[in-house]
Length: 147
Image (cartoon, rainbow, N blue to C red; front, top):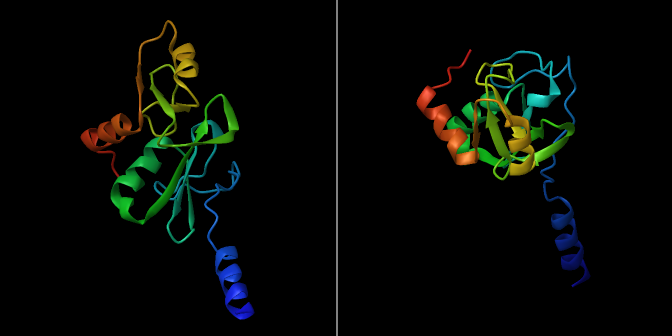
């Protein structure tokens, strides 16, 4: 009986932790476009069901990868544009697309913790506020190409 208890404990302790890894600017390479990540404000991460972490230099690279590999993905994270050391769940984050904030891959997407933050950033500028599904659909429509 004690052996079974320890086996269960062991199995539970081996459960994969799906936590994002810190982005190393100037070192980490985008898993999609293969460019070096130079600006943390636009970065993103995907963690697969097997626990492998993929890092991206831009939200659009992460979503392009996501759209091609959805069945293998466990978690998706984007960096909070206003606090680049904070990762947000990509599916609940709020996105801003505006030509006034230039992202590395040119779709000019940035991510925010809430709608208030995104509205404040957009104030007086042209652009649109989007959710996860809307951003994914834009990526599918505009067919972001692998570099």
